[in-house]
Length: 446
Ligand code: G6P
Image (cartoon, rainbow, N blue to C red; front, side, top):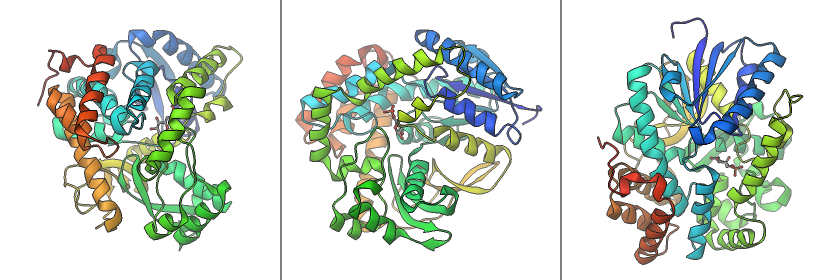
């Protein structure tokens, strides 16, 4: 990093989450001197980009921080000489997410943004765009770090490892930090006193051990989780239906909120179907929330991140992003859970696959901390999801219909090959506009 002050580029900068990120950079400015922050979006998102960009400028001015906010729909202009590139975009915007959530429900299959059929199709739409961004980065900012927030973050990180030569990539998610905050709230202590040993995959991560001031309190946390409804740990986008005590006690680890889709499939499905009929799927609810947020963002007197943003599932996301960038830039060598290449840390997962695991964060990037074998009860599911992610990534780059059907069929949330095929047909048709690789246009396979 040569210049005095960093250049950060955020792709999907018109997202309603951007004020989170701005707040994070403002808070850390003394240690992380971001000089230029380029918010990039596609022409379809230009209005949102303008609104959120204007709010970002007011926030920076109010805080008295020397940070130049630049807005553009020209990604290549923004990427030139960047130090960090963060990605937080959604191909097809919320309307596409709503289809991912609604269509599977017709087949009595979980409809979710990052899991099951929805996760597969979000990956198919997103991976070619990420690989395209990487091609631009190779040319315009070959030394930059790519910090990917775009879902499905695990599958996307896997695709970068398998289908490009780019290695300076970290996949990031707010689930681990959300779990840490949830435990701190349950124990009624400051989050800095809680440490969790995380291992698994994105949206499939387990807290193997939970510590309070160095003391192992895993058992106490699990006991509280199963005995006290108020102690439930979840995110705003996932309903908490409580856990079966005998299951969690035998598991002996902290599941992540997304594990509900795998261990409580029928109850989660019933809940999704009721919600879809009564108030709308999560994307439909979020669309309304977003409308309210953008109304607020337009008010010239608003000069800080509004509280309403906390109704979103992505809470603490800026904390996770900014502390990661800060630790890479300042070579802090602290421990953070991120998605990175396994390098042998978790037994049974390929060496070069992406895993979500605690790492020491250095200026050379994350160094995964050895985990060894995960308990036998969860090994199979994790390997199955990893197989799914790999096959899905292959489908995304090749545009092969059969490979997409294969990925859909091996997903544990999909009941049969016939239903898988129907889901692929239905979702391909629904997302045609964003899946050119399946309709005769290649996306440049490595
Ligand atoms: C969680 C997940 C994110 C996801 C978000 C959705 O925080 O970790 O990956 O993007 O929820 O939240 P939303 O408010 O959009 O439903």
